[in-house]
Length: 138
Image (cartoon, rainbow, N blue to C red; front, side, top):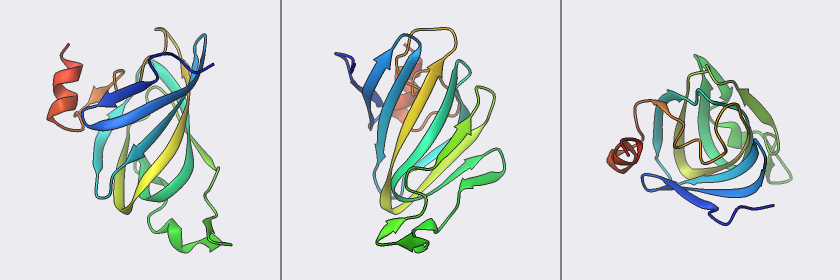
Protein backbone atom coordinates (compact mmCIF):
# COMPACT_ATOMS: atom_id res chain seq x y z
CA UNK A 1 0.00 0.00 0.00
CA UNK A 2 1.34 3.44 -0.91
CA UNK A 3 1.27 5.96 1.95
CA UNK A 4 -0.89 9.07 1.79
CA UNK A 5 2.17 11.28 2.30
CA UNK A 6 4.12 9.57 -0.46
CA UNK A 7 6.10 12.54 -1.79
CA UNK A 8 9.05 13.62 0.34
CA UNK A 9 11.99 15.91 -0.29
CA UNK A 10 15.69 16.01 0.59
CA UNK A 11 16.15 19.69 -0.14
CA UNK A 12 15.09 19.96 -3.79
CA UNK A 13 15.45 16.22 -4.54
CA UNK A 14 12.19 14.26 -4.59
CA UNK A 15 11.51 10.78 -3.30
CA UNK A 16 8.23 8.98 -3.82
CA UNK A 17 7.11 6.26 -1.43
CA UNK A 18 5.56 3.58 -3.64
CA UNK A 19 4.92 1.02 -0.93
CA UNK A 20 4.85 0.94 2.85
CA UNK A 21 3.90 -1.86 5.24
CA UNK A 22 5.04 -2.00 8.86
CA UNK A 23 8.82 -1.47 8.95
CA UNK A 24 9.20 -1.88 5.17
CA UNK A 25 9.09 0.76 2.47
CA UNK A 26 10.02 1.24 -1.19
CA UNK A 27 10.96 4.71 -2.41
CA UNK A 28 11.66 5.88 -5.97
CA UNK A 29 14.36 8.55 -6.26
CA UNK A 30 14.99 10.66 -9.36
CA UNK A 31 18.06 12.89 -9.57
CA UNK A 32 18.66 15.62 -12.16
CA UNK A 33 21.83 15.59 -14.25
CA UNK A 34 25.11 16.50 -12.58
CA UNK A 35 23.93 16.01 -9.00
CA UNK A 36 26.29 14.99 -6.22
CA UNK A 37 25.07 13.36 -3.02
CA UNK A 38 27.93 13.50 -0.49
CA UNK A 39 29.17 10.58 1.60
CA UNK A 40 26.55 9.67 4.22
CA UNK A 41 24.75 6.79 5.89
CA UNK A 42 21.27 5.96 7.17
CA UNK A 43 21.87 4.57 10.68
CA UNK A 44 18.34 3.25 11.23
CA UNK A 45 17.68 1.74 7.79
CA UNK A 46 18.92 -1.37 5.96
CA UNK A 47 18.43 -0.95 2.21
CA UNK A 48 18.81 -2.49 -1.20
CA UNK A 49 19.25 0.13 -3.93
CA UNK A 50 17.99 -1.09 -7.32
CA UNK A 51 19.17 0.46 -10.59
CA UNK A 52 16.32 1.69 -12.82
CA UNK A 53 17.80 4.22 -15.27
CA UNK A 54 20.43 6.87 -15.81
CA UNK A 55 24.16 7.24 -15.63
CA UNK A 56 25.72 7.44 -12.22
CA UNK A 57 28.48 6.16 -9.99
CA UNK A 58 27.09 4.77 -6.73
CA UNK A 59 29.86 4.12 -4.21
CA UNK A 60 29.54 2.09 -1.02
CA UNK A 61 32.64 2.73 1.06
CA UNK A 62 35.46 2.92 -1.46
CA UNK A 63 33.87 0.50 -3.92
CA UNK A 64 32.00 1.54 -7.04
CA UNK A 65 28.89 -0.62 -6.52
CA UNK A 66 27.20 0.61 -9.70
CA UNK A 67 30.20 1.54 -11.82
CA UNK A 68 30.93 4.67 -13.76
CA UNK A 69 30.00 4.51 -17.47
CA UNK A 70 27.79 1.44 -17.09
CA UNK A 71 25.53 2.91 -19.80
CA UNK A 72 28.02 1.58 -22.33
CA UNK A 73 27.20 -1.95 -21.16
CA UNK A 74 23.85 -2.22 -22.95
CA UNK A 75 21.76 -5.00 -24.38
CA UNK A 76 18.74 -4.10 -26.55
CA UNK A 77 19.10 -0.46 -25.48
CA UNK A 78 18.79 -1.24 -21.76
CA UNK A 79 21.67 -1.15 -19.31
CA UNK A 80 22.67 -4.60 -18.06
CA UNK A 81 22.45 -3.04 -14.59
CA UNK A 82 18.66 -2.62 -14.88
CA UNK A 83 17.03 -4.32 -11.89
CA UNK A 84 20.28 -5.17 -10.11
CA UNK A 85 20.43 -4.36 -6.43
CA UNK A 86 23.19 -3.22 -4.10
CA UNK A 87 22.83 -3.72 -0.35
CA UNK A 88 23.60 -0.74 1.86
CA UNK A 89 23.63 -1.57 5.55
CA UNK A 90 22.91 0.99 8.30
CA UNK A 91 26.63 1.54 8.95
CA UNK A 92 27.67 1.67 5.28
CA UNK A 93 28.89 5.08 4.13
CA UNK A 94 27.88 5.74 0.53
CA UNK A 95 27.75 8.54 -2.04
CA UNK A 96 26.30 9.20 -5.48
CA UNK A 97 27.67 11.09 -8.48
CA UNK A 98 25.04 11.60 -11.17
CA UNK A 99 26.13 12.42 -14.72
CA UNK A 100 24.47 13.98 -17.82
CA UNK A 101 21.63 11.46 -18.14
CA UNK A 102 20.37 11.95 -14.59
CA UNK A 103 19.57 8.97 -12.36
CA UNK A 104 16.68 6.92 -11.09
CA UNK A 105 16.66 4.05 -8.59
CA UNK A 106 14.42 2.21 -6.18
CA UNK A 107 15.32 2.05 -2.50
CA UNK A 108 13.88 -1.04 -0.80
CA UNK A 109 14.08 -0.31 2.93
CA UNK A 110 13.80 -2.12 6.24
CA UNK A 111 13.48 0.46 9.02
CA UNK A 112 15.15 -0.87 12.15
CA UNK A 113 13.78 1.47 14.86
CA UNK A 114 11.44 4.20 13.68
CA UNK A 115 8.42 4.01 11.43
CA UNK A 116 9.34 4.60 7.77
CA UNK A 117 9.52 8.20 6.60
CA UNK A 118 12.35 8.86 4.13
CA UNK A 119 16.01 7.93 4.06
CA UNK A 120 16.56 11.64 3.39
CA UNK A 121 15.50 12.22 7.00
CA UNK A 122 17.50 9.35 8.53
CA UNK A 123 20.83 10.93 7.64
CA UNK A 124 24.32 10.95 9.10
CA UNK A 125 26.81 12.96 7.05
CA UNK A 126 26.98 16.11 4.99
CA UNK A 127 23.56 17.22 3.66
CA UNK A 128 22.89 17.26 -0.08
CA UNK A 129 22.24 21.02 -0.17
CA UNK A 130 21.12 23.96 2.00
CA UNK A 131 17.46 22.96 1.82
CA UNK A 132 18.29 19.48 3.02
CA UNK A 133 20.43 20.91 5.87
CA UNK A 134 17.47 23.03 7.06
CA UNK A 135 15.19 20.00 6.86
CA UNK A 136 17.56 17.92 9.02
CA UNK A 137 17.69 20.65 11.71
CA UNK A 138 13.91 20.47 12.34
